[in-house]
Structures are given as structure tokens and as C-alpha cells.
Image (cartoon, rainbow, N blue to C red):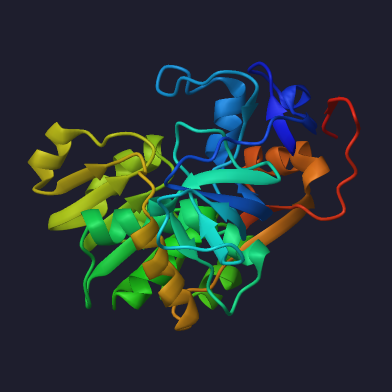
Length: 321
């Protein structure tokens, strides 16, 4: 099969494309012929080697944790899907990724693609959507009438968090730059805090939930805008427990574990019109390095998607432009 992969940790020059063996399909696996994948910050962090202490991989390594496509074949014990089904998935962390023509995924991590969106849109949802779902639904238990602050609302995770919080009936605040004020408003934000013009710590107050997607000083200042009994949830670093106890709030921190049933619930929200995919940029697979560069700039709006059509493959591996 054709794939984009790395043979060593490093910069964009490590991204290669060429032929790799087809994935082994286990008895509970669904083999997906990919139509689209997406780029997440974790992809280039793995490429750079930042997560070596947490994730142990062998080379060549195919990156990517989002995929949408059509089921090519199924393992002997698969019961939920059949060849020809349009699906999307956030595959397991410990297997090869999704920058490839063929991806083998345990059926428990797969869901049917929502009928009302494209494959490119579907590929934008799994990791970011599931991260927002776990933060707000599984950990913070957001409910109607609550006040939720989402940091970096224009980003890949933030834009789904805004929509989910609204779907749960919350009042939503978000931080973003001037250029993205109207963008986040279009996805349901009730109050926008332009961080280039004002300090959220001076504007926001008595929040029931703060979702931290930035860390550092932003996380530190977030303690001061949460109401007693509220919660600070982070996907960047564990919040200080001593500070949380002193402030009378709870904390949450997690590393996403994929789940096909949760993904199916997100798909249902998409079909109901309560959740809209947010594709900010689309690159052909041979321009994966450019997609990584955009993600690394921290100025991407919504999700970055890789499309699998019109890719010219060479017989030998080459660097990706």
C-alpha cells in the first residue's frame, strides 16, 4: 500500500511517502480504504520525538490518528460492519496510523460515517471531537445552565468543545484572536474574549467549567475564574491539585482513549445538526509536510485534513514536499 511515514524522529524532512506492506487484519479488525485523514498536533509531536517516553513505536512509523473511508474487508469475528460501509475512526494509539491507503482498526473503535457530511469532514471529527466529548461530558459533566469557558475556541478541539457545550445547554465563553471572533460566534459562542485586546482573567468569572487546551500561564490564571465547586479540565498538563483544593474546585486531566460508541454518538449529533465539522484547510497527501507546518504554527482554524485523491506515488520512497 502507499503511505506517508517516518523512519526516524525529526523535522519535516523525515516525512516520506512510498510503498509499505498492507496492514495485518486481525479477526476483530475492519480494513478501511482511506478517503481522508486529518492532522493533529500530536502527529508532529510524535514525529519530533517529544512523546518517546510515553509512546514506544517501531520504524517505519505511519503517523495519523483520524481516518474516514470505506470498509474494504472485515475480520472473521467482526459483526458490526460489512464491506462497503462508509465509516470513520480514531484508531488505537499503539498501532500504525492513518496516513495510508489502508488502515486496520478494531471494530470497537469504528463508527458509521454520518450520512450528511463528506469524507473530508468526517476525518476532521474523531480525535478532536472525542477529546471535547470526554472533557465536557465524561469528566466535567456539563449540564444545562452552566457557564463554560473554552480556551482557544478556534482550534481543532476548541471548536468542537464550543458546539458540544452548547448542545448540552451551557452558556459558552471562549478565548480567541481578533481574526477569529466572528468564526467562533458562528459556531455558537455566547461571549468571545479577544486575548489580543483583553485578559480573560479580568473578564470571565464564576465559570462552572474551564476547558484548558493551552496550559502554562493560561492554566494558572484559569484557577481564578472558576466558581467554588467548579472544575478545570486540561488536555495539556495536570492542574495543580494544591491550588485547586485551596480554591475549592476540582481538576481533570486525561489522554484520550478512542471509543467507537462515543464516536457514533458524535455522528448522531452531526446528523441531527447539533455538531458541524470544521475543516479549516485541506492538503493532498503529498503535501503532508505543509499540513504539519500549518499545525505547528498554532494558527490553524478548525481541523487540517489530508485528502487521498490525485496523489502521485513514486516507486521509491521520497521526501514529502
